Structures are given as structure tokens and as C-alpha cells.
Image (cartoon, rainbow, N blue to C red; front, side):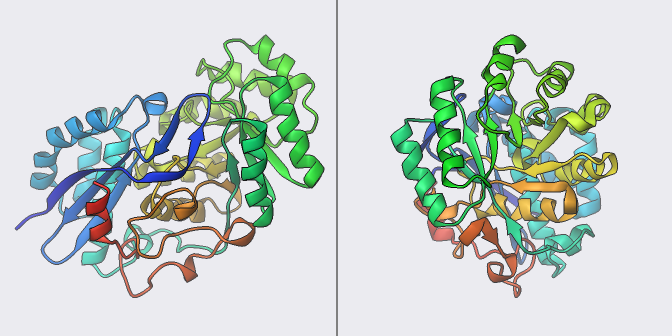
Length: 371
């Protein structure tokens, strides 16, 4: 019997409503792929986002149905997977989230069959503890902002990322509130493609009450030269998320390497292998990166982000995600991967070292409950 692949639309409610400029949601929007081999089972996750890569659950399902038989006939180990992804690169690049889930499930399965961790199977660095996560706060009222910020103060976070609205009074008040609590807080802003033109953006940046560590995706236009110009005019590093998806995007980015910080999100990048290639190239070009997350990820994608951060080493300047059941009503993993005090995460305490592959204990009953 060959590999059997199953597509599941995973829908887990959030504990809190999450909002930013491009979207708002109160539950996950997740593709879960189960890869069943003769003796082992692999699991993979992808989070399609129409405002990021123009994908949805429906487009993912169509892609899965188109490609499943080709995978079953052609893919049986890492080498055949590497060949297959090159042969199918033109369609994969338009279906990054679903491919991410498929590829992760296959890698998890193959590593288990070979009795290796996924790092051992891929021949990359083992995880390097500890990892430190950023507090991410969505846009909303000041009252809501203070309540969420307070939870992070109680957990001793030092790094914050704020989803901004573009309203100077509203956004500046939130920045001031954080800095008044602790002037040593590091703050990044995420605009989610707010501005049409640079002049309005420059006006916003001109009077920022405190220095910020980065501004993510400020413009609606994904023009690398225009984004670089913002850095040259303001001195604020620009974090590239939707504007950086493919390895080929380095062709423009490296010309302005000092201007940019990459946001490497495994689902957005089209899986672990693409993300590894991007991390390797970022290190070669000495471009810093944040290992980001899609809102509502389960521990499967969180686990894959640890792998990527461990390859970036000192070029990983921040991590996002790992909220687990602080955001989700439940996780499909029996021991969810979540940060602790100060945003600190020690994988040694969370992964089951008796397991292979992703080293996670998946709860099939919970998958059934949320599918």
C-alpha cells in the first residue's frame, strides 16, 4: 500500500477576537493534511490567506484534488519529494499554504519511517534552545489594547508588535502607553498595507513619539524600491511580509539589504524546504529575519518555525506565534508548543524526544472535533 493523503478543513474557535487592517477573525482558517504510510502517520498544516497569497480553503482543496494522485505515484522519500516539487513548481507557487501542509505531512511521515527527527532527516541543525517570542497585539480600542497588553506585562514580555490603524492619535497613544510602562520595550509596528502613497506615510512616521525597531508592510504597493526609500527617508527598517514570498525576491531585496528585515512564515513561503532555502540565502546576504506566524496556527506550524529559526542563528531577531491555547480554544497537539514567562520557549520541555519526525503527539479525537 502506498501513501494515503487526507485533506481536512480545521476550524478551531479563538478565545479572543483578532483584528488588523486586512482582516479580522474569530476562528482558525487552516488546512490539515494527514499522510498515512504503512506503519506511520505524518501531519502537516497550512494557513491560506487571500490578502497574503490569494489563497483560500477552497483553492487549497482544488489544488489538493488536482495533485494528490501525482504525489501518490511519484513521491516516496526525500529525494523523490525534492524532484517532484521542482517539476510542479509552477502550480505550487500559486498554492503555497496547501503545499506547505502536504510537504510537512510527507516530511513528518518519512522522518518517522526512518526513525529520525525532522532535523536529522533534512540534515540541518538541531533545535537551539531557548527561543524568545514577541507579544503581538491586534488593532482595536484603547480599552481592549490595555487589557491585552496587561496580560503580556504579567508574562514579562519585552518585545511587542502592534497592529496599527494609521490613525495618529490612536496609534501614538498605544506606543506611549507601552513606553510609559517600560522605556526599554522593543516595539515593531505592522501596517498591513495601509498607505497608498509615501507622503502620508512620511507624515505618520515623522512624529512617532519613540523610535521603533521596524515597520511591517506599510504600503499597498509591493514595490521594493519604494519600500527601501521609506527606510532611507525615515531610518526605520522595513519588515517585508507579503512583499517577500519567493526565493527569487532576493534579486531586488539584496540591493537594499540594510533597509529590510524579512518575515519568514513557513505557510506563506510554501513549506519547510522553501523556508530553509530562504533562511540560508538571508544568512549569506546578512539580512536579518523574523520567523513569523499566521494568526491561529496550531503547534504543527509552530514546530516548523523552530526548525527555521535554528538555521538562521543570529540573523533571527524575533519570533512570532506560539500562542497555543492562549488564543485557540484547543490545540490538536496533546502538549501544545507555547511560550512561557518572558516569551521564552524551550523545545526540550515540550517535544517528545521518544517520538520521531515533528516529535509531537497529535490527538486524532480533537482533529475530528474541529473538522
